[in-house]
View 1 (tube, rainbow, N blue to C red):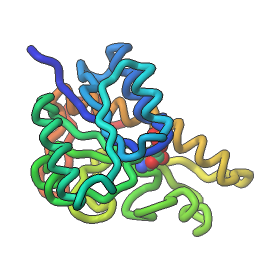
View 2 (cartoon, rainbow, N blue to C red):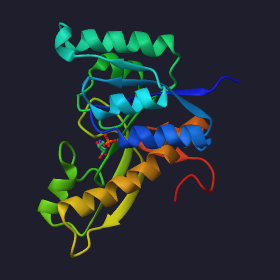
View 3 (spheres, rainbow, N blue to C red):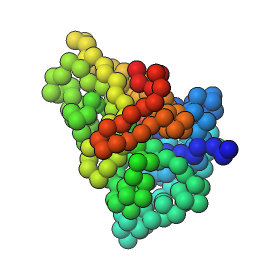
View 4 (cartoon, rainbow, N blue to C red):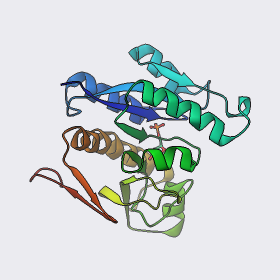
Length: 209
Ligand code: GRF
């Protein structure tokens, strides 16, 4: 049986990309492999991580294309060539158009650093702290055409302790992300995830914590 193939889309640091790659190498990604990194920022640290790990990358500059749809068509062409099963957004800082969202509906996921539907959009950690919440966390969700509005697959909550500052809380959130995202991807690779309207079911006693 051929491996389950994922493409990771990232624009920045790439710590989630690294965690996924390490899980794949350790055999804890449900048998999934990272077939491609897609990155819109040639100077982003994630590009060097992919090089070091020997993972193929498609790196592009949006301004070299006449429209968002034009570069997304190019991305889809490459994903099809590699027979990618799942797109995993990990800090990809661009809104997707229907070119990708429709073609990969149900096969396109994102990780967001808050308990959605609270604090969608940019700087979710800063938004949550500024609001004064006592609990925030991490959400992995399907991507639809809205901003962080797709069906929720998994969430982990984190307490905002009295002494927390932006940096310490962000570190705690990122640590949870690096644990949760590989786990969720492994559920997909093992065929455990079912989507029904807004409701996501993960088969098996260990699917949901
Ligand atoms: C993560 O906090 C993720 O939740 C958000 O973007 C950040 C990416 O971090 N979508 P990294 O590039 O994986 O280190």
